[in-house]
Length: 98
Image 1 (tube, rainbow, N blue to C red):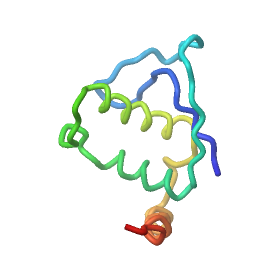
Image 2: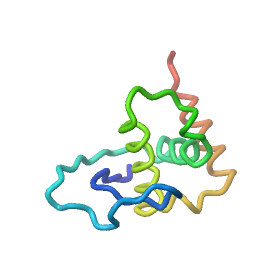
Image 3: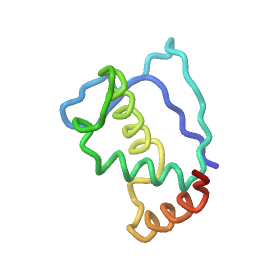
Image 4: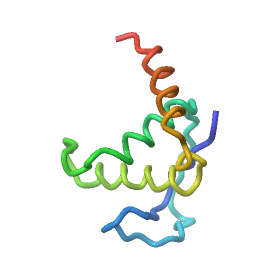
């Protein structure tokens, strides 16, 4: 599994401006994701129009944008091929038990 460190705020998403440096005083959380899950989430975040995603607070949208930024800047996911994305989607869907 690959560690994804979700902390602070920095964004390469157009229209979103946060300090590029993360505040060391902010609490952090470490999340270990199965790589296929990370690929599926990254692909979805890159393609979804967050303005159409149902949210109950604007912080939810911002948190999704922050996660996308972490995927973009702290992983090798931006270089994924469509074949790798398709393979990840099949692997994740295979584990669906609901």
